[in-house]
Image 1 (cartoon, rainbow, N blue to C red):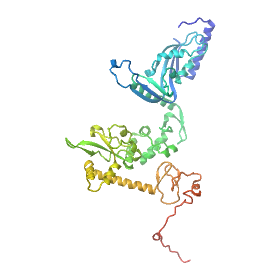
Image 2 (cartoon, one colour):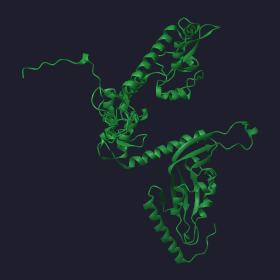
Image 3 (cartoon, helix red, strand yellow):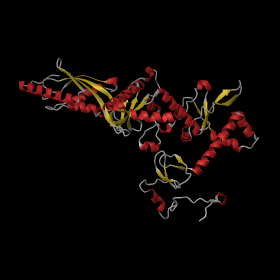
Image 4 (cartoon, rainbow, N blue to C red):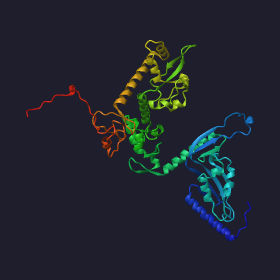
Length: 481
């Protein structure tokens, strides 16, 4: 670049403005700016802070000549991730003696960490075009890059949705983990530097001594450790979760990674065992079955460890594979189940999921001694099929009793049984006030208004009238009056 001829007084003015601008930048962005007086090179390391989490689609660009690369007909690889920060851009800048009055800064080099910005050689021209004579420019450059505004100028935003970032890259599977790792590390560093109040002990602590749960609530590690350890020791894994009242009402439980960051390894293993035991005792909706060769010509279905390999609790029944459809031992349905993992296909072959209710009903609907029952007993084993039917009948009776003798808490869905007293109930788990007759939430300040509204089903029914037979009356003896 040919520098214009400037007057000596302009040189002094430019030098003074440069010095002042650099001091301001170092005070505002101490972690972004570094300079060396020897060669007068300014180094900028500017991370991209997107603010809200945005979707990033990393797409492998199509080859210019598919036949020569041997990938003709191959679909381009695509990786979709969600990020709130992107790796920094590194700029080496030289300030001419005539900056900022007569010439812009010179960008000696520019690169992106992990080389995630395509066609980055276009960016220096975009930055230089922002210069206006007599105006400092470095602050605008930093903000322009830090906020991610340059992405639009580089054609890296989707035209249909500006919240989607499009990154062409020759190796999406390699760059995606690097970007995700940087984003997590950046969030962790920022979280550790700030202070957060703990709603349990009512103290404010640094993020390094706190833990943010998936629900975004933050508590100090000491409070979570004391609470979760007590619950695990007492066997109450349902309460190992967020202590926030709203999350308690929703029944939000902590994940394995969260628990592992708070308790010891022995306590983590006990928590996993208790959770597995609870899920098995809640009731079974699906059994895993494998096909094993009974001979060289005949294939028979053998039950696959029915007790240990129960599939999912009743609430998660929609996660299972539809009846009759095969699911490999690494399928999404197997991984998403809240239960023990499925045996590997190498041990048991192809895994089949069967709805045990349908199987039990099919057996019960067939007549005793019928060919249909005999076929099911041959296929699954007489002992296994009868044990499964007994389990189904027991669970059905339990559900009928729960429906007739208990009421669901409208706050946390926990079932409550009343053995005496009025119909104004307070849930033991979430402290929700509700009516035991109809299950409606009650105002804690005025819970009895519900029973004093004429025309309503629960009007004047705070207490249930119980008919007592003559055989339940006991004579009472009184002394002489």
